[in-house]
Length: 147
Length: 420
Image (cartoon, rainbow over all chains, first blue to last red):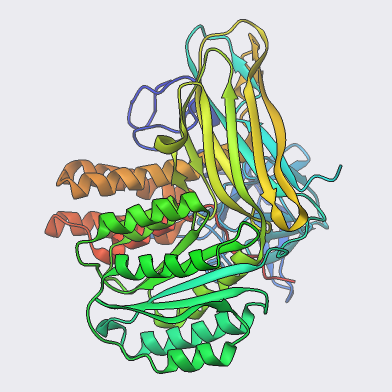
């Protein structure tokens, strides 16, 4: 099993490259979903406790996190201005996947977790979400609503 | 019968491809106190071993005195306590005794004036001797060691004492304040004795660390915790990591040709323990394959439980279904990722120590990328800063090294949820 990052040959079954620590191909795509672009209009919004709304772009994969130009991390939904840093939001915290009428959320191995209706979800295991659900990234809570 | 301890055995993949070659399989053994298990039923035998060297003067000593006051106030009347202070000389300030003389402990400590250098082994030996006076298998026997300085050429003596303490069931929590102390030594002291270690940058945090340590001692659900993994033919254990209270590579100590025997000290009933076993499995035919069996044994002396054991089997299925074989257990993957970051950091620091600047830089760069992907921004930035330091000076900074050493070991600890 060859590492795509450093070309080191790893034993079959290894999960991360022994040389550079990169995720090996079995998990390929999980972290790179941020490069998806495009999409039309808005279907869902995040609503904060004080009534502010944050539009969720209508695209297949929407990365949620904190922008960091130095590290070249530009999530689709930047929670910096919502207190992301203080609230424990990771740079690439979670991804909302959209296929047909189904939305799922996947935690990207964030430090402080993603919660759906107060229950922490397992990293890298997408969970279905729908309008009316409460989502929490670290300590930042939003309700999910139709646009 | 009520189970005091519960274990779960998770494999990196439930289904493995038939590849005709040796494959890596990770087994995560998750150990938790069973629901309804009583914590804190074991009285403590708590020894404080405290640095009183000249550099402790001022804010450090003021905060230390306050923190010792906290320990005195929060130990129970049935607990035992001792206080040993050291510089290049040792003084047993409070010999091992019941913790009810709280005001005496505080007033004795109030008189301590910083002086002299730092000789940790003498202080540690005297502190261990005090804990031994009150030693009992019915107690949580524990030492909290605090220092702010480099010890004087007695590192080996410290490690020998730590090994012996660990074997006797006396865990040592080591705490370093500031930047002028040897993190490798303090981490080794903790790992060898099945204890914890903390880096405190600001003296005001001494109290927090002491609180955490007392709470840990009072949350012990079981002692003499031991994990034994017996592997089937064709299965070879290659690495073993413990994850609580810190990630530690215990492979050298616990892996043998046929399996794993790991002494883990005590089980924190609130935090639990998890052991990651990396194996190599020889090529197998299609069908269910038993990798081996994990057995966890433990004692709860206060409840008359001794040598209790819980067992779980490790199974995978070898299949020609390539799609099924791509599915990876998320919980195992998450832990392997953290261990992977810890390994990269360890190798980077070793390369830097050996003067291999190019190799150290490469490893640090990889570590920074991995940490960033995990959302560990601060640690990733610390790695980046150390890369710059290597470029400019050919050496790592003391603070950066400590940040990476401690930060990656504690990746398994997350912020406690405070909202609602």
